Length: 266
Image 1: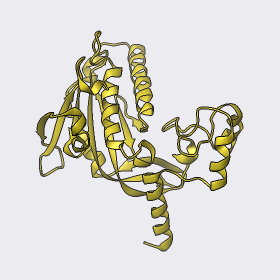
Image 2: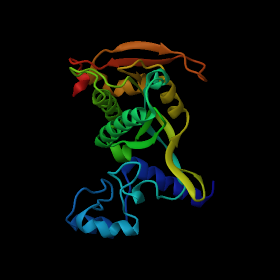
Image 3: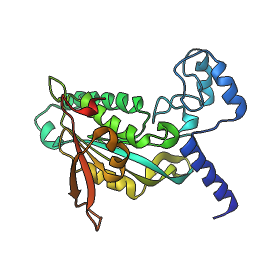
């Protein structure tokens, strides 16, 4: 690795762990502009007097409207390996669910899900990595979600299930299961010149996805590494051992179920 690459990696790691540090002048000036909402990292306003700044690239990010594009997907290719939490949520039995539904009804249902998921994940300081048909992938990065990023991922998972009706008197309007895992992943802008995406790759992401695939509707499967960070709040949860594709050893998880009396309502 060249010295330039080492400097770039160090910059990315600092950005991902501590948050993006824009030029000192900009960070002093942006908070003086009277407008809200703002990018939570560089404080650039998105409305009012901040509207002209959109023409300079400071527009809300498609990954998370609480961040601007300069603090998210507009950064140059590169990244660093840091510890993050990854959440996957997926509609259970999607094919059977929509088999007899008209196409417009399916689109309406999934748009309702996308809107609910977007609200919840933004409220919990997630980076919405992508929607994948009937599922969503979100990243909880220390520099954005704060030092309690693992706990924030669990809170988001619970809120996501409640947003589709679990734990409410009317019950769920969409069968949804959630899986969460945390650990090291390469995070940054990945791709070739001109076509890059801010994302995370690595075993942690794969394990989170495969944990989610075994989560029943209305449940959150949490890896033991994540559970260790939230055990004090949720108490003893049912332990399970999962056999995951590509993993030689079983993966230990804990199961949370959302109900009207569930402590994860908070």
